[in-house]
Length: 138
Image (cartoon, rainbow, N blue to C red; front, side):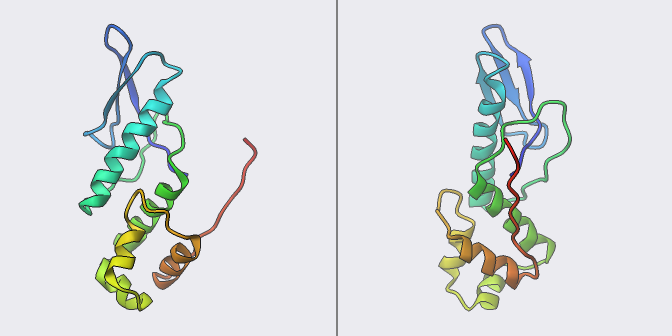
């Protein structure tokens, strides 16, 4: 799952949360313990906004403080988004490769849509990639 760096700056009554990779991200946290979760929430919203308008989504850079892991479905959708761009393909082109209607492909990139794993797998396969899972102890 994806994680992005964040910066927590004291602001008097808590902390201002920003993300160097996504300048539109701002949030606040009462304590440093709350900061990773608050950062993840704000980063997910920023990514959802970028995905909705099909804007660039930067890959996470390194950082001293990383947000909590992003939602697994959003992480897969972002990975598919990057794969599509890396292959220099369009959503319309992916629809042709899959033999699907364009609106079905668009839902693959809709952040709050509960896409089925077999649909993700088909899309990655059509782009010459494979979706793998790894389970690690918590």
